[in-house]
Length: 493
Image 1 (spheres, one colour):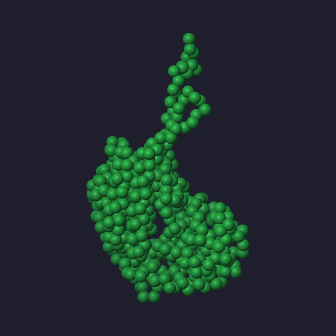
Image 2 (image 1 turned 120 degrees about the horizontal axis):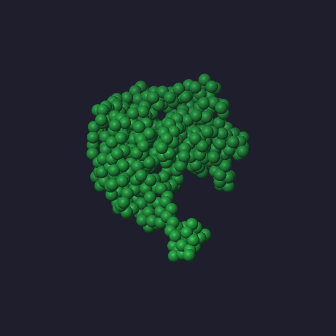
Image 3 (image 1 turned 135 degrees about the vertical axis):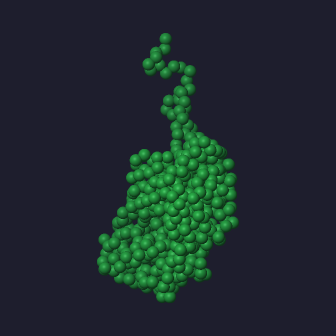
């Protein structure tokens, strides 16, 4: 567990010497005192990234040279995946198998963008056909500059890789600010990139509280691009800060994603995917399918099976073998989720299953998988993101009713549909106002495919080639190739 910040390739103490506590959400014990960076440290990190971009070798290196470093980072993460996963469990609370899977995905993300870095060499420019034969034009792509990346606590190292890997592939330099709730693996990334041979200053990591480190990063004039994943209110503040300097910005924000289940669906498959769509990572997933809409004729049977299977989910410390649902990340998040359940009940919702602290788990931020029914369409629990193991289930009459209910949200990150009728699935998928749609499943995420949402769920896309484009500027270079004079002001003799 690192006790210093990572700036300009060195481990340095925070300018003001502060720390903040890191708490294991399963035990409520303080496991570490992490370095608390402030505006002074952010400034030092941005200046280091600026020097590394303006004067360092990284942006000038070929894509293949950058790819070699990215692949080395991937290899180190894979070699250390169990140790890194254990840090993630202590920090975040998720079950160990989920954390190991996260580390494998993180390594895969760096390897994927290594491939895209190489492709930049293969396609260094694009010729543009012009209507005027005396001119020729081409387009080149260049790294955008210094990126500020602010990441959430639900997938600490994986979310870091979604920003760090494409930025490095593009030739950018970065300042990474992880969540104060989960700083451990993000700091460890500093040691990993050093071992992999990343030049000093290319990646800088500053841990600290949002107002003291995140806000100064979003407002820093030396940052060319801001990338943020987190809540809508914080995203709005970052967007406002970016507007002052007209910074490039990409935002991946919240969701209240629907899962539409038609009556012809296989009920066992439906229950499995509903459980996976909301209880994976304790429901602390921006794309979680937390609004389940079930066709009326299937609704009673499916609800009964869903309640029965949710009650069987093993809850416990993420380090314990067999745990499938760990604690929520913090007391603050735990209290918010409990308050949401109470508000739902006050507004008329029925708790069909769960909703309580599990028996025998008196310490830790544990909550039973919770299933709510009978809520109104304008109720808080149906409309707002809860970000915990809480799913709302409602019946619908027909396809049109399902689409109306699914799209009636200020969010538009993800949506899912289940039916044996493939044509209907395709039709409903096209009707969803969401950036990610799953058919007969929920939550599979692939590095190759774009990730992002409509409406208040964000701006831009991460992952795939779209993620690389976030960190590239497009430059037009046009040449006048004729020996004849232009002759607009100076006329030929």
